[in-house]
Length: 209
Image 1 (cartoon, rainbow, N blue to C red):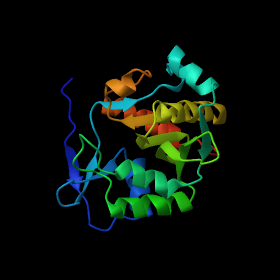
Image 2 (tube, rainbow, N blue to C red):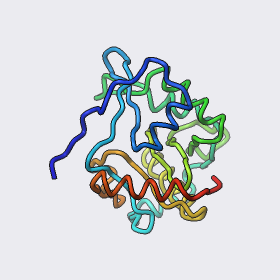
Image 3 (tube, rainbow, N blue to C red):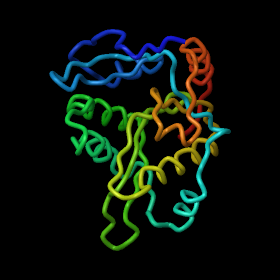
Image 4 (cartoon, rainbow, N blue to C red):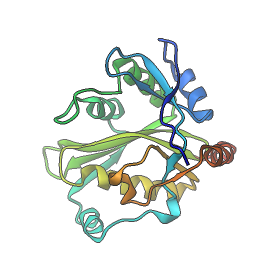
């Protein structure tokens, strides 16, 4: 299978919550060009997904979760998590999460369609050291980004996310692209045509977050 990760088209400068919902329902997701901030829409083929029934957690990570090294919360500081994911870090000179995208996703969160998982230091200081966020439509969770400032912080958030999705009956966890970091958890790639069928089915089921 020839991999296609090129942008499908460049969108209008105005990015709203409604446009985001339209994109996700049609198997697309936006990324801002790191040079000029222009919004580009992607629908990679193949598409990366994490089968919820095949999620793999290493023994060391399981011990980390059980040790309560971090205090984990849900939707406590959504915009802050997105901002942390957008920060330029060593080894990453550009970010695909532009200020306009942060505003649009924050609006989506206010509408109940975007959520975050946060990891804090488990002490009186409660410092935010990890998190992830994504979009929820039907029984699908579209993972957008994660960040970590402490060992395993974002991984612990992912474990809590998957446990929550399983408990609520979600059927699709879309990770968009894959990489060695995600593959350790069981992420696989499937043809875009198969992904769209799974997406259609997931959108037909109403699930409470």
